[in-house]
Image (cartoon, rainbow, N blue to C red; front, side, top):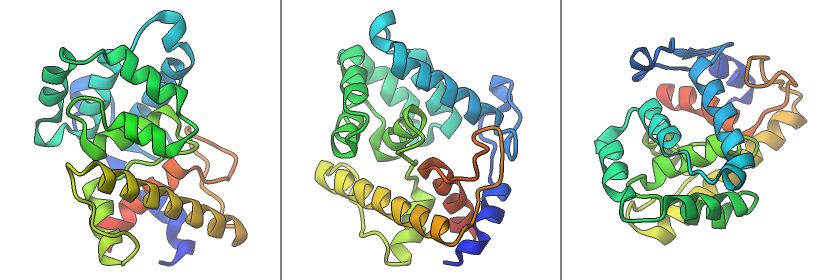
Length: 210
């Protein structure tokens, strides 16, 4: 992987799923309009969930819609939300947000999300620690021998696979910093430093070309 290409990959990032339905343009550099909005509101949820006594169910639904709701994830979430105490589930994640193993373990208990959307949830809740692990990145990193095969539905496999992904994001961040490869400025951050969530966005474009 040629890390010097990462700024270009990051600037090439584009996601345009159900954006028009929600009144957003495609997520592209430097605005990333819907991503920036979700980040801001998920961080508010993290800081205010207990004070306001809310799990912000509609915000989680919107995050699922942002991601495209592949394989009926939104319907599964809605169907399962009546069977669990969603507030307690979200509180467990918030309390453990700085402990990746616990955070992803609790996120996987959110109804219907699976690994892809549980990791998206964490990515928006704390973009300075987490990135989203979707099927495109999983396949590319599996083919590169970076990740082992992750078995969906097997909690240990999903947890350990996601932790390995986070370790890899950390390794890439260290290498980017040591090579003085700055992240292009954008609405999400303008320090030149790479957050794991932004490395994941560059990987998303790299995986498409891999």
